[in-house]
Amino acid sequence: MVIYFQIRMVTNEITPVLSYAYMSVLVPIFLLTDYLRYKPVLILQSLSHVAIWLMLLFGTTVLQMQFMEFFYGITMAARVAYSSYIFTLVSPQSYQKVASYSRSSVLMGVFVSSVLGQLFVTLGDVPFYTLNYVSLGFVTFAFTLTLFLKRPKRTMFFNRRALEANGAIQSEADVTHATSVTLVNEKPKALRGWHWRETALVKMILELKNTVRSPRLKLWSLWWVFNSTGYYLVVYYVQILWDNISPSRENRGVYNGGVDAAATLLGAIASFSAGHVTLRWSLWAELVIFVITALQAGLLFLMNTTTNIWVCYVGFVLFRSSHQLLVPIAIFQIAASLTKELCALVFGINTFLATILKTIITVVIADKRGLGLHVNNQFYFYIGYFILLATVYLMRGLYVFGTYHREKKARSPQKEEAANLSVTEQDKTDGHAHIACSKA
Image (cartoon, rainbow, N blue to C red; front, side, top):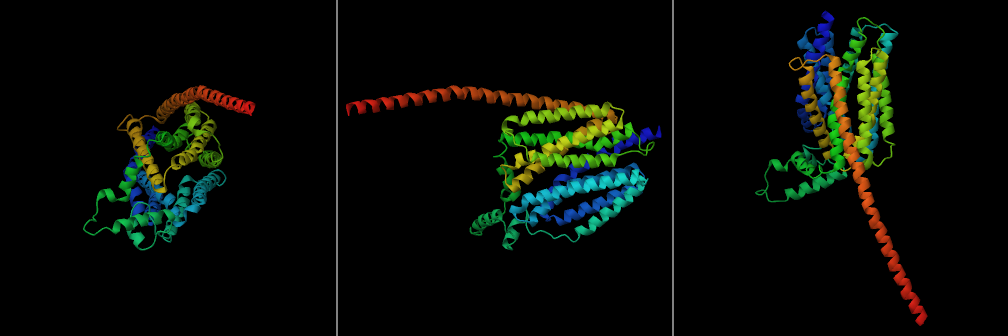
């Protein structure tokens, strides 16, 4: 009975705090990251990592565990600082390589930590509590490294005017922006004055209004919002589902770390493979998303109904890698027609909307102040959620496919008529030429 109440507290009182914390700090951190030029936010993220493991090691109350989840929310929101920081240190020509290196390093870190943790537990019989000390040592070392990071001179949204005056902006896009600022500054001082519409962030939001009409941008942004919401809710609560199937207190043969490693490795392979997929996405995108989403719904059903932990493990690995398959495709489709600044803004908005939706779902079905559902019942909700998404994608995909074929059929008679007209004109030309030759 005590174990049952502990699981209920973790499921309905502690874990939901992560979604609330993430939503509350995402926008401030997104703005402060650029305004403070990245390094202070990276230091904050590292300090939050240290606080997480201190709470895990020495926290004993529900409130302390809730604070641990709050700090975890800060570290997740501050990931934007890391992903943006490296781009400020290199020229635009190196963005693709840098993006590849940074993503590979993150995945490799997750993979190595998962494998080491699994080996310590399985072969070394190391207690879980001791693993927290090892993790604390690593995050403390990472915090030390952040103190020596170079603070970038360039930013995307803020500090542009001051940095331009100091000659800090070097890229072609920055030079263009600097030129426009110089032209503005040539106006008489009496005509110049600060206005909220002149800020870079407001200008980009107004510019973004002209791009939201793109069907491709809307489709993949909506996929990012709705599918990532379901994906992260599953990731947050899957450990509790595993413990419900095979309690770690009763069974030392748990392989959660190995499963995370396998899921990360397969996800990396899927992400890499997605870069080599050649497809007419304007026609097939909705149907491809439907297939992946329907597969995810089926895998969730399998994970939630099985009593075999290995079946649940395999289901999660496939679920996670299928999501990772579409992530780089979504990034490319969204970024294809946007500038770097608008790209960051769109991804920030998408992430924020997904966080709001995730928080609403958490309040309703997971929090004890809502329905406070058991983890199995929560997964039934996620199954229904993905089935609903798959149905919408299928209907939309069939509509796009049907519209394409109707337009194709409508174009065919026009092409045939144009071809016949061309043949008639050619016959007339040949006839005139024949008469001219006869007269000659």
